[in-house]
Length: 400
Image 1: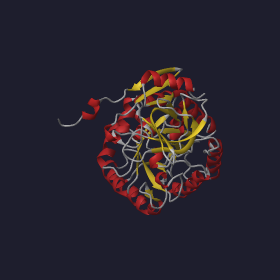
Image 2: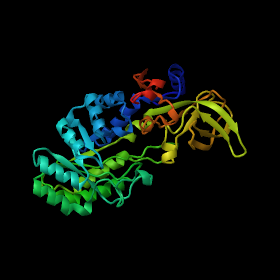
Image 3: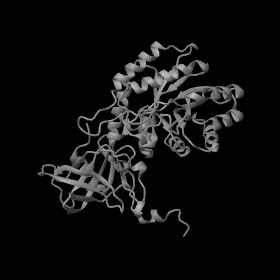
Image 4: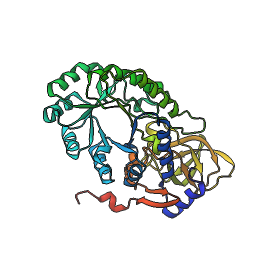
């Protein structure tokens, strides 16, 4: 069950606003849904921690049995700090200096490489001594927004599949141990056939890699942001994946494990951002409700035109009126335009739903505003997992 309005009000009253609140139970339920859907398939899940890296969230992810996918060497170190075994950590990045890959190798984690340049450097240094994966660009358009589509033919991500001959030349020249093939087409994928298209691309390539042990289909599962919103049919996806692999046995005779990298799917619905209304401003065009937050805390509506359901926690039965919800940043930071909400008064608390993924994680100190606190609700108990910034945090690391 989601957190109730009374729970959210109580936490906001205790810890102040703005505050991010996460429901551990939701994360557990989403992971169990994945496990149940893919129960008949040898599948492994790596939480894409770029969605939310708070160390307490990572520990919860570990405790429920999920592995972790990291997109930077510092995310790798956070995962290790949270207690993940190196073998449960997958490191897939792009545009990075080879020294990050060297550090990942020293830490003993799983590595996917997404450029010919770094693949060659890896081969020259490690040869067959350390297993590695290759991130491929499948030239498939997928995702709910061009900014989160990563598999199309103009994307910077992965090695284009049409450069397979160059990949094979490097593998042969340096006797590389290719353990995994990886693709990721984007985020907010509604159509499960996009994943099937990716599988079809991989099956043309798999025969070239005789030591392959797994294929990584990435993540990008769509979650609903409002009533009636489409979402990825996880159960149908599991069925489609099982059918695809049954119809395409590995010609090399080896069993292949299937990997996925759910991020938003696990934590988006677990998160709530509670803010306070600072000011109401009536104009000829609209009535603005200015809250004590902005794109420095939740940038998704401005960056991706993302929709977040908003409710008035303080006046849930008030008459419906139309408001535009805006932030307190000196930029245009509109959360919602002409949204019908229960009557808003100055001092009311508004909650933004589906704020668990890419919310706090993409926050900043723009306008020298403080980053908000984070609270985790686990087994009905709320506890602070990150304190709110104070003025000294703005000066930290400056050479005074």
